[in-house]
Length: 88
Image 1 (cartoon, rainbow, N blue to C red):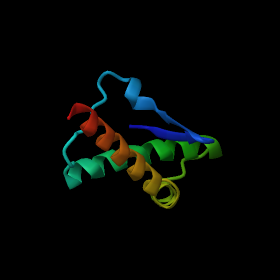
Image 2 (cartoon, rainbow, N blue to C red):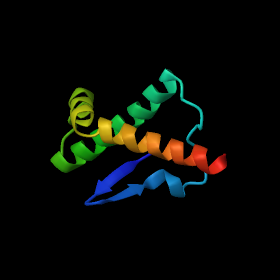
Image 3 (cartoon, one colour):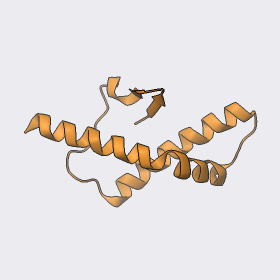
Image 4 (tube, helix red, strand yellow):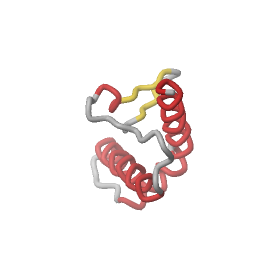
């Protein structure tokens, strides 16, 4: 899931994808790891494109963890809670 913040609005890139599925039950630690890894890889690509060189995984991980992880988890949990409450 790609969650992008532009100003005060959010863009949920994967929500328009019919294959998008966020589990309603708490995900396993491994599933959360895979979701974070996907976001870190996407962040690495964006950083590398912006700078014109491959910035490497460690730098992308460090930057994503300090700048984006808290927000990403918060929004991910909000989406899961919203979906769970709309189904109940």
